[in-house]
Length: 350
Image (cartoon, rainbow, N blue to C red):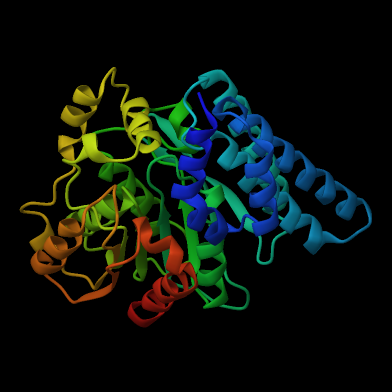
């Protein structure tokens, strides 16, 4: 593979990398250090190693806040080392495991800390982190739902914004995501795992189970509204990259397409297309009665604008929109506007 693939993936993901917390100078150096796509995992991992080493040094010196942020940064870099990288599944797994391990070091040091929990679902346990805001009794809780190769560890910016506003968070890995990928592949009835999270939170004494919201990113921009259409325990929902359907698989960027094929256990794009026919809000959108925020970009190549406009037109409850015609997937190039707005939306309705 060529340098062109590196430039393509970094160009496609640059705003997301920066929005999630990759330092701009690091991103420039990472890009400069790669001559070929085969170096993707190695180079990102080198920068993850450096951040982890800084974290250890800070921890040894008693600088716990610095250590926490460096460990979280290391986890983010390890995440992107293996994100949408399917050329070597064994390498992907080993780098993924490093991400999980170093984030587990960060979690109890962050303020407020993240508490590891396990959510039962169809014979397995889905790993998750519960985070409670400081000084708030029985807070509302926001479920943080990822998309393709998006996990509980790389949701930290939105997580921070929520807890700063007095909201608890529950970030988890569903089937085909993060740690759960290695226990259970993506499922056509993925929304059922969201129901399992609601069941878990209903029994969680630290939060107010009557005030639960959900933010769904990318494919989560389908599963969040789909779950809201099925379960009234969801009191507010965000479609962060609205996905009414996924019938355009053949036209999406190659790295993303490879991911859909991989997580669905398909052998071809055609098989994946058949698998993801399950993504369709027709007949379900009208059942969404809770307030819904739709965040979308008109230049999105993964989920086209019609997904946002149709979801907004058919939703059965109050709808708010944040849409830029010149923005891309999940409006990562407007992350400084979009992400605080999603947390504010949850504050208003929960």
